Every structure is written in structure tokens, then in C-alpha cells.
Length: 230
Ligand code: SAM
Image (tube, rainbow, N blue to C red; front, side):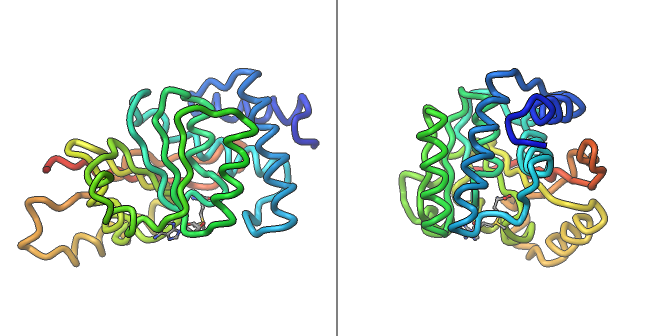
């Protein structure tokens, strides 16, 4: 299967539809441009081990779109550890009104993100070469994001630690994880380690959705934490 072919676009569109997400043909064209850049840059810098055209469509693009149902269309959103742009750039392709910030600790990966943003002419999206813990030290960024999202970056405990100072009051942290059984163990460990004194302003992770990646069947779990405090 060739990237950008009719069968590749059909795979992408039909898999997204199985998750209740509508991808139109011009968005599918944008995904094809993105996938071609991913393959090209991946020869020079390590972006992903997923390189088969069908797997890029399903494991990177469709998987990145799955949390859209939990995200209002015009919020300030931060993708921590975005790597090759996942999930932030696919979400932005589908929902242009999102005010998107991508951060990553790797300069080369951020260069790739900036290249994709330029080629796809995406508005209202920044890619910053900075660690999340350093971003949290910048006063103007504290408590400023309505939604923070992470995929394949770190544990639930560490994700919450990174996101907490950056999350707005009433904001939501969304973590895209693998098998539910493993996730339940991570949540239990986080709750066990929570000091009693921190309980009032602590974030409490909850499993929002368990689903199978269309056509592949791999189990995925979406975990959310709402910030009900300040
Ligand atoms: N989210 C992408 C995905 O799902 O394909 C990338 C996952 S990759 C395994 C993890 C990325 O997180 C790497 O690009 C790494 O540089 C970045 N990262 C790890 N810790 C970070 C931190 N504290 N702040 C910012 N980026 C971080």
C-alpha cells in the first residue's frame, strides 16, 4: 500500500469513522503529506519505528484522533513529549480551531514538527524545544492550558507531576495509554503513593474509554484527570 493512494486514504478514513471521527478527503491529503515527511526524515533522525504505510495511518494518525471526543473545539492545548507530532498535529488537522502547543525535549524532533507545520500551513500552533518541567517555570505558562495531553511519554504519576503546574483551573489532563490492565495498576500505584496532606488539590486519574485500534485490535485506554482546584 502506497502512502496517499486511494486505498491508504480509505483505510485512514474508514478506521477513523469506526471511532466516530469524520476525516474528509482534503484532511486525508494532509495526512499523506505528513506521512511522506515522516518517512523521509526518519531516514536521517530517529522519529518512529512504525514505518509501514498502513501502520502509520492506524497506529499514529487514527490513534492520535481518538481523544478528540473529550476536547472542546477551541481550547488552549499542550501536547507534552510530542515526538514526531503525535497526537497534537493530527488533532490540529482535524480541528483547526484548537490553540495548540507542542513541546519536546529533542531539538531534532521539534525541527521535524516545525517542518510539518510549515508544509501543512497549520495556523495557531507552536512547537517549542523545551522540557515540560522547564516550561512550568515560565510564569506566563503556569495554569494556562485548558487541556494537556500525553502519549507514550512517561508513567501516569510522572505525567501528572509534569502537567499539574501548567493546567488551568477546570482543565483536563488526558493520557493516551495501552492496555487497561496495566493502566489500572499504574492508577493504583499513583493513588497509593499520594500523601494524605496533598489530597484536596490532587488530581485523580480515571479511565474514560477503552477501545480497540480499528483493523489491528490493539487495546488502548484513555485516562483523564480533571483539575477541580485552582
Ligand atoms: N508522543 C509521541 C508519540 O506518541 O509518538 C512521542 C513519544 S516518544 C516515545 C517520547 C517523547 O517525549 C520523546 O520525543 C522525548 O524527547 C519526549 N520527552 C520525554 N520527556 C520529556 C519532558 N520531560 N519534556 C518534554 N518532552 C519529553
